[in-house]
Image (cartoon, rainbow, N blue to C red):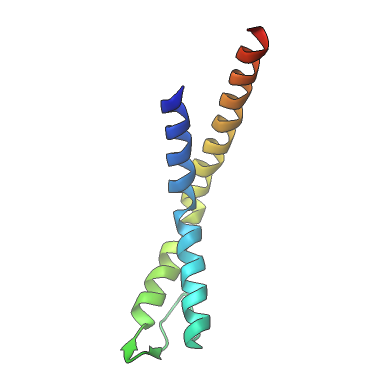
Length: 93
């Protein structure tokens, strides 16, 4: 049963990585006072480094959420199913 929970955690983590990418992009662009757009990258100088490529890459990576969201949803459903199985097993004992 422990491997089932590890599998659920990995599914949810893989499914939510693009959301973390978008969160990092938003936090970094807000901190640097830059704008980020999906089609192009505006120059964004912060701490002596041009972060425009990093912000654009994080923005593009965040769009993969539409592909990984079903994995996260399946992980949540599998987690609920595992919890119900454990509950039924405990009720029988």
